[in-house]
Image 1: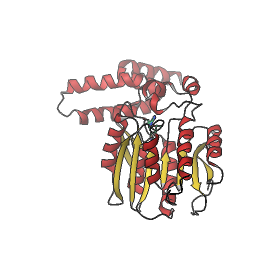
Image 2: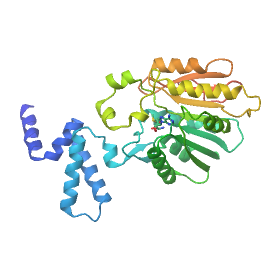
Image 3: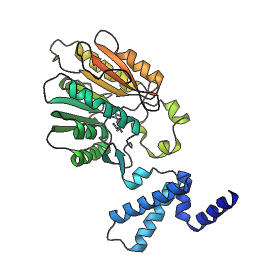
Image 4: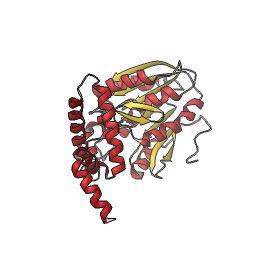
Length: 313
Ligand SMILES: C[S@@+](CC[C@H](N)C(=O)[O-])C[C@H]1O[C@@H](n2cnc3c(N)ncnc32)[C@H](O)[C@@H]1O
């Protein structure tokens, strides 16, 4: 065992770049794999560079990676279901938890009894991974409204949507640069139009950000995408206020706001959001993720039935 360790130490001393990757991954196999991916990506990205220029770029990337810089920003993509989502610094990297609940939402979207095309809002869209998943999986005709405050995010979302758009079921995609928290009129106008809202908002409190959030996330992913005021609950509260305001309007179409699906970060937050929407207008259900953590709140307008509302199959 000791001999094996010494052998690796000597090997890493000779291969400086691999040592950087090892620092990030803590596994020699993973480090080698990352080295392959990084070299391949940089070669593809700079086909006209000389061998020496590429070598320098690889070493630079490995150094960054050694400081826990996310691999997805170096490789510029993250798998999300069967999709490859483009990632850039300044835009949140899509997470497996989100992939799980959006996949589970597709049968529900297929079965909601509203006339086609169903109108879906991806609120706080970031890279557009949720919209892309919907666009590539949903069989029924649909319109997508993709909303974010960040131009960087909307640019990447537009690029991702162009790449993943399937055949003809995505009839229309509109991108909106909107501040959810302050643009009340714009938000009311958009929400009024939609049958379904899918939303992964910033939901980490500033205390959690400083105490429990991973260093690499804190250092390299955009704080704007992560942190919300009011103990992380600000977005849920503001969106709920818009929704309840609209529901008081007698002219609101009966098919508007049939479902709202929110990602949350903890059981406490799940219960908070469930409570926020429970009452005479809505039923709210909590879904767990595969790590058995409360992850998603599905809010359904009362009076419609679909097959897929069971809590956890
Ligand atoms: C948690 S990320 C979700 C990104 C993506 N939907 C996903 O699941 O990977 C939250 C997103 O909300 C956006 N955002 C933050 N504050 C906002 C605001 N006031 N109005 C609209 N979008 C906002 C951020 O730019 C970020 O893209």
